[in-house]
Length: 281
Image 1: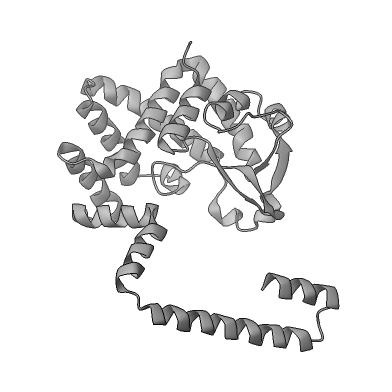
Image 2: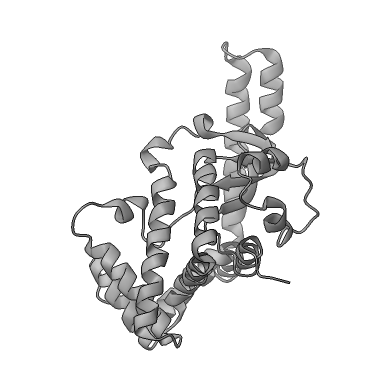
């Protein structure tokens, strides 16, 4: 089976949880919070924001980013001259995606950028991308054309479709190289040796940070970030006095009771809403 862009991006999303070019996740619908729905948003980038790519004049951050890309490609076995040529095309491609995205300052009102469509409607709006192939490559259940999704960046996806189609006609390797590069960049914090040296050099330019935190500190943060509830449960089991739990539960009960009493005497809420509020509390 020939490698398609959709299958590659879907496999990276499914196997490594890395949304590249397409930001896709499942979460509560903003207009019906009792219902989870597939959602799409504009992508994140290898630099902290789109503005780093679009800066006019000298751009040391973008130059350092390109140097990191070439360094990593060389460490993986590529010829440096060839890597420089290919990665220059990759960063131009990412700059196009950044230019197609919406500035964060224009995205504060999520209701204004909320779009609910069926997958068929999304396919009609962005026909250059095979949405069914992409979603089917990692979603845990069968995807149907009539399934609804929420899109917060339809303008970005329309532009993205055209960018992907044009780039694929010219040189499909650019898109593949970009996807693999972004996957590698997500793994760099966990690599040491020369990889760590090159990443530290890049971060020095970008953030003014000359060294990473110690490895044990990074590991603790990662475990706490990914399994925070489990870590908290272990800490509470060893350090929390059971009597403190009883006191906390009693405090919550008293707060809830006081709230309900205030709720019943207020004059700005109708009776049916009061009943609903009490049942929720």
